[in-house]
Image (cartoon, rainbow, N blue to C red; front, side):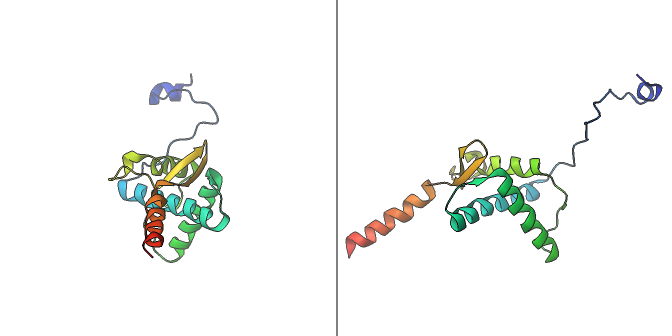
Amino acid sequence: MSGQQVLSGATEKLPSWRPQGIPLDEPERNAYRQLCIQAVFSIWANEHRPAHLSEIYRFVRARIKEKIADREWPFSPYRGKRTVDRRVNEAASAAFYEDGVPKIVAVTSGIYQPNPVLFESCRKKGEERLAST
């Protein structure tokens, strides 16, 4: 251990170690979750397939750049992929919704789609309308 580490009380770290960023506050977490949900729904609507985490990240980064250009993003523009990955996992968790129904669900590890439960009521209403005519 070097003298500087002894003086500072630091521990030895691997060369690959990087300090963690500043934690997100709740409004920023919510904004990221909303962008993640938008990404999943957008990919589902445009390409008719589930979205991979890397695609969601690219979508979120592009939307943040647009929002920064429009001066609509009051948060740090330098969050990483892990931050987006965590927000996707949160968006797929029932614990983050008052009604307990997540907007997106995991199809498999790292693959997400809109929650089919959200479309059940639309389907039932459509069937009821057809039956009443």
